[in-house]
Length: 279
Image 1: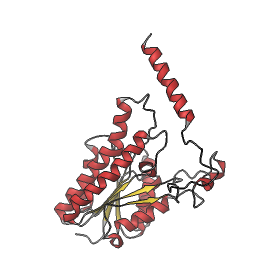
Image 2 (image 1 turned 90 degrees about the vertical axis):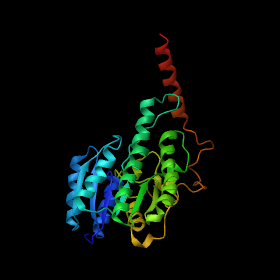
Image 3 (image 1 turned 30 degrees about the horizontal axis):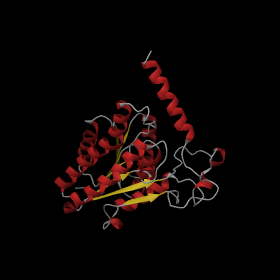
């Protein structure tokens, strides 16, 4: 086998996945990555990876398609001949109230945020076991898997499920020396919005006084996937500038942290739907 290690990053045409892919390439890894719709962004990321001296392949993949995750992993392995690490990052967020949640809403979230991630991890683990590679699986979760807000019962629930499952996978795969960990990002400014233009500025909400960057997550991923973390498995590293710490900066927290507008709008939508159904 080639001595260069290979990482597959899902959802790397922009944002956190892009940051991880570029950082891994900069530090000597060859990179495979997927995108969903942003082919233009994927092509730009490919060029940037090549400029860093790494080999790269990219693929269109839909995490909600039950056949797509394993096919993505198998193709990456076929193209590179090995797979040393996978970063399960691709995800979509859809917020809705339990008062109005449909089966389609919940199925969409579970298939993209949980099922697709597990299918990717399983396919990668099978290749690592077959090839005798002491690899690494990394899930990108969220502080929403650990802290509670009004609007995220499904999104936060799926992120929490990833973290819990990762612990079991860490035990199951430990005989093969395959490590499984999570990174839980906080507020990461993937769209590079000027904080001073926001209604609620993160400089006043985050104890360390700023939003996170893609590089903050990428440097942590580089560590957890590398040899320096060879004795770490089953852990979640929260990277949020202290946002999810028990204490909240004075002046930001409400007495009752319920998003009343969301609750009111959800109730109104529920009543409107019931009125239409009863006509």
